[in-house]
Length: 335
Image 1: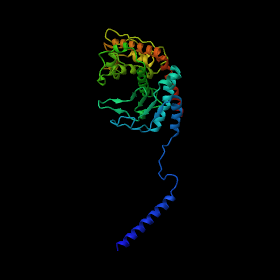
Image 2 (image 1 turned 60 degrees about the vertical axis):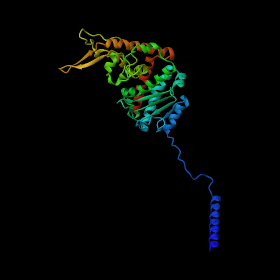
Image 3 (image 1 turned 135 degrees about the horizontal axis):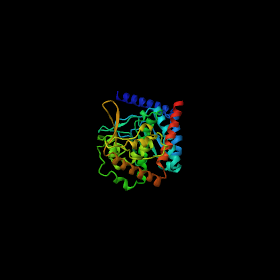
């Protein structure tokens, strides 16, 4: 009985082996495992040809969790917004810098990786991060989905991030003068978000965020100059506004022709109060002229630094950006 079972087992095993060999002989040469290749869209090809080939810049807009801090909940940008943003980045950021600073400058110092994120990065302290520069190599741009390529003010605001982060890259390569750090020594604070813009101005800061440390102070001034571009080609005349004995600003603002940046400086430390009859009064904070004086000194240091170290006139660059921005908006409106 055992002998019969043993013989049957050998026969079954032999048949299985024969079957296996026969199947092996019939195996196809190509793999039956299919690995899906990443689809490269026309947009991806344009990014490669426009940024990677001439500038050695990689642009990522599809999700890559290795490029973001996973402690925050953020999402990738919509494709159409990523396209709009990168088209604008080329025309109103790279090309103006290339015109003023030179081709070699932009090719050398442009970030080697730009990573786009659709949403802002919300922080525990209630603030949100709109951009990050890492080691002079990578720039992460958040909130790309809110980009508006038909509105000059909104477009300029969106590119505040790029100018801010690129200024970080430059001062990390060549440090700005130590003198700059002394202008607001003792007024930097981690609680910058508790200050209004008016209060920050009276202390000599362009924005509340610039109060966080001297690096942010430096790049916020640069970014504000380069994104306050309405009428930027008018001569830059920076003066302390005249006021009467009651602290009220004198002069008719309606008849004054000022660029947006001149107006920002003119209104430094000045608030608008509403009277009982509904009219508005410009009220200058007592410390306003002091804050403006500090700001003008900072601007002089920064503009000289850019001319000396990088051969760039910031206000010439500001004018190039304005022209390019208006041309792009016109082009977008006709599409």
